Image (cartoon, rainbow, N blue to C red; front, side, top):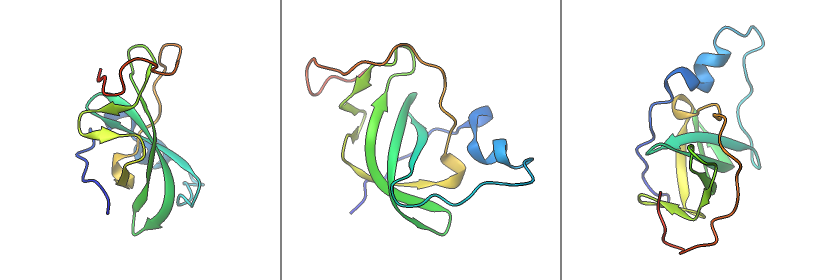
Amino acid sequence: MHKHVEWDDPGADSVMRHFEKDPMGHSAPGPGDILSARYQGAVVRVKVEAYVEGTSIGEVAAIIAVNNGRRLKSHGKLALGDTVRLPDDSRALEPRVGEARDDDEDDDEQR
């Protein structure tokens, strides 16, 4: 079963908006692809397992704090390994972040 997520609006970083003017468009995600979205200000990477009618279904592969690039094990109600649904209109381009490093502190730490 997947976890319901209220994704942040990608705004100017929308993947769909980025490709709408590209005559080649973009291809549908497939199994193994990694997609990005925003959740409560953090970047979430989702590893696609299936794609159905404009929505990717997959596992949370990374949660990254935008301000410093720190990798988190959880953020809000979302944790690494959760299965989620990611609609195409919620996909976001990745922002530039600080140097990423693993979060080796408390497993439940949230930023």
